[in-house]
Image (tube, rainbow, N blue to C red; front, side, top):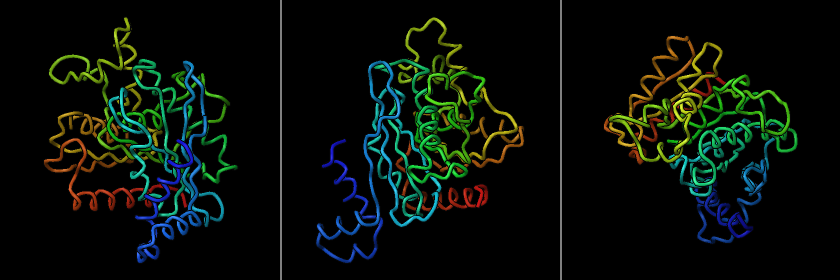
Length: 298
């Protein structure tokens, strides 16, 4: 992202985050005021893999004193599409609450097949932990989130233990730990999408023709890692989702309950793959922030 793109993002933020600024019709004043309140640090390289420099964008309030709770976001697109830039608006509710935000790029399927995106997501978390002091991230209040394939990556980032070996190529040796996961209609059982009635082309493309694809799919499936010491997890899923079966959220919820992990499933009646109506979004965000307020350390 070039400086002009960063300026565009700042202008977008101005429309949503400053009620005082919203009273004026002068767009230059909007941008100037919000630039004084927030800063955007775009396209920081957190990893190089397969000849690709992987980037993150950092968003911060300039008024924070001390470390801020930090929202780490992974975009959707079936692991084979999408971009961090297209998901900037998903950061706004957290920025409005005074959080910092980190927006993550990862390798898509046409660059590297599974499990590359999972490895990258873990490395992005490692970067946040390693650079927490410089950027004011509160490492006790790191929340990972994403939608669809990004929801899957948020879950794997929060659930996969170091002994799984998927973070071996990340720089540093800091312990990877998050305070909570906010999962928007993420995939929880990758094998379920490779064959049979729930087969999805995006999952088949991400696994490719690897001879051990069933083993890899199990290795990157959140349901493979349910245990009692997981962070709190809240999932949002429409019960009429045609892209990621609603049962993925139901089964994860069942397994987490059985393991006595703090978790919540917010079901959107007749909800499809995102695009929920405004009244549902208000309800969902009310549930999310209530869940986080109860479960994050003070």
